[in-house]
Length: 146
Image 1 (cartoon, rainbow, N blue to C red):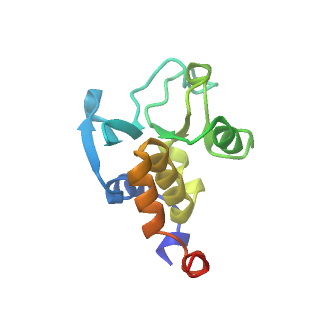
Image 2: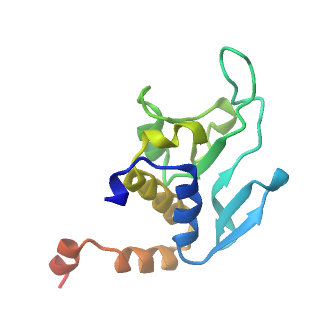
């Protein structure tokens, strides 16, 4: 039941910390940066001039960055205008998407978990990713591989 509820910003932290081999570094202004093998996979961004409210010009103070596995994955998340994910020209060519903390609730906890897990998989070593995928294969897929 918890997976179908609306996601919260606290879930980002919980889900990122639940992935193996994660270290947390305080970013500037104490915004946490979640890393695997020294590579960031989720971080809370400081207000920047490339992500602003279109009506007020005020910088968004609640932007969360998630790595993605490919440009196709990125486009799948940001092309739908109803999606809470977005990007900015600053992130052109960068395999990540942005999400405002104020819009996290547009996702279910399960959907957010998938985004965090995919971010981790995009940055983890091949061995760590393969181990995690093996250990988290759906039961029907696991039976098919026997």
